[in-house]
Image (cartoon, one colour):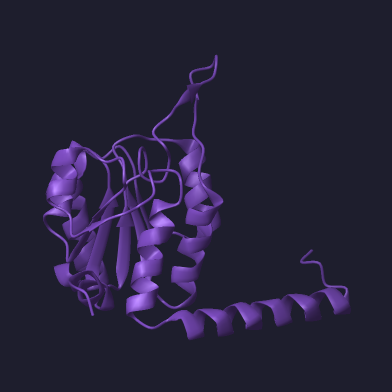
Length: 190
C-alpha cells in the first residue's frame, strides 16, 4: 500500500475548491455580469459515487455563484461555503460540525488561496495544472487538470484505498433496479 492509499483509507469527507479545481478556471461573463462556468460530468459522477458509500463532500470557494449553488444542490453536496477568504477557518468549523479529525479529511485545490487548507488535512491533493507552490505541499498530484476530471481521480483513489468498489457497484445495481421498477409501474416521479 502506498502512502497516498494509507492516507486515503481514513477519509470520511472530501473538500473541494471550485475555480481551477472543479472548473478549468475559465469564466465567461454575460452582459448582465453573471459568470458562467463549465463543470466536468465525471467529477459530478465521482461526487455522487462518494455519496453512495457514505463519504461526505464540501466546497469552500472564494467566489460566489448562483450556478454553483444549483450544481451543489443537484449533486447533494453536504456543505457549500462561498465568498470565503479564510478557507482554513471554515474547514475547521466543518470538521467540528461533522466530528472529523484532520486525517479524515481530503482537500483538493489548485492555487495559493488553498495552501492553508492543504496544510491542515490528512490527504492534500492538487490538480495537475496547480501552482507549483501548492503541489509542493500536497500528498497526491492528479494526472488530470482542473475541470477535466481531477476531482474524480481523487475520489477514485479514496474509493479504491477503502475497497469500496464492490459496494459502489452494488448500490448502482440497486438504483438501476429501482429505476426499472418505477418505469414499469408508470411512476415517472410526478
